[in-house]
Length: 189
Ligand SMILES: CC(C)(COP(=O)(O)OP(=O)(O)OC[C@H]1O[C@@H](n2cnc3c(N)ncnc32)[C@H](O)[C@@H]1OP(=O)(O)O)[C@@H](O)C(=O)NCCC(=O)NCCS
Image 1 (cartoon, rainbow, N blue to C red):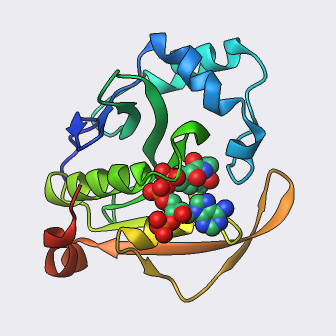
Image 2 (image 1 turned 60 degrees about the horizontal axis):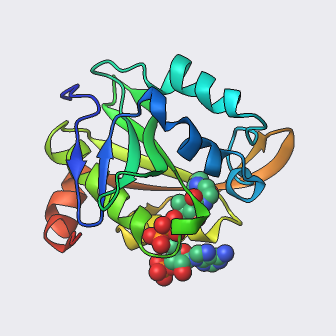
């Protein structure tokens, strides 16, 4: 695997870049929304300082093994969401991806655009073997994003505890071989 980190990925309507410390208002706008965090592992932000602290302590710390993109609208550079590698297995050269989008920009195909861009980069440039995505079984929007990008269902579901609640999680995956063989020419942005 090539550890190339968070390189800029320019797509049709969005551009994926690193976060910076000036992103706190845009980040707070979606991270403070309970509807947005309902299926996520973290709680909604309650103060602007939560956003500032996340940017200072986590989101703006990058090295070659950090794959953490801010999703920005091309037209005005506004931060509208995030997509990142949440788990990296160096032995298997396998990653897990997570994503989130400001509700004002949902249902326009933007996360499918972002996921295709990141999938293509991780397979073609970083030579990742396999990408896995998980979601709560009730999170149909997230599941449709994965399926819309050609991700394949794992046959088994898992019962996990998330934010102290018992939830059922489903997984999808893609391998580099499947991507190259069946999908790369169908990824239109
Ligand atoms: C999941 C999420 C990123 C999707 O982003 P998005 O840009 O709206 O996704 P897209 O527009 O590319 O595709 C969404 C699809 O889900 C569908 N959809 C949206 N809300 C839905 C709902 N409540 N029930 C069923 N389908 C839904 C859309 O119609 C679209 O379907 P299509 O593929 O047939 O066109 C966004 O809803 C989000 O940020 N949710 C909160 C955070 C989250 O759950 N992240 C994922 C954790 S696993």
